[in-house]
Amino acid sequence: MSVEFRSKSHHIASRGIAEGSVSGRRFAALLTGGAAALALVLATAIPAKADKKDDLAKALIAAIVVGVIANELNDKPKHVPVPLPEPEPVKQPRVPSVCAISIDGAERSVTLYPESCLRAEGFDYRLPRGCANGATIFGERDRVYSAQCLRDAGFRVSNR
Image (cartoon, rainbow, N blue to C red; front, side, top):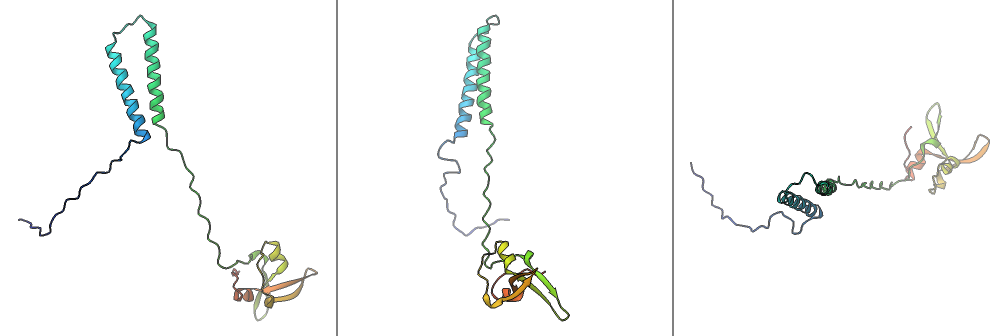
C-alpha cells in the first residue's frame, strides 16, 4: 500500500527553544561543576601524603566550599503571595437584612426597614422620600421604608 501526498512541503527554519543567554541558576551550576572537576583533577595530580595534616585541612575546606555552593543551587523557589482579586462593585446597593421588621397581617405580610437602623449599619445611600412613612418604634419617632418600595427604587432587598 502506498500513500501519495499532493500538498507541497515547506521547511521552516527554527532556532529551537533554547534561551539566548545563560540564566543565573545555569551559570551557578556550570561554575559548581567546573569547581568540582578542577578539585578532582588537582586531587589526583598531587601525591597523597597521609602524614601531613595540612593537606587534610585543605581537602576538608575544599569539600565544604563545594558543599556550600551545591546547597545554594538547591534553593527552593521563594513563595510569592498572589494578590486576591478585588471584589466587583455591586451595581445595586444592598439593604442590610438585620434591619428588617416583618409584620404579619391577616391578609398580607409587610417587611419594613427603619431609617435609624439602616444608618447605624452604615447604609449611607440616599433613600427615596416617596417611600418614607412615619412610625414610632420603641417610643422613638422614625421613618420606615417598605421592602417593595425600596426594591422598586433600585435597592437590593433580601427575601426573608
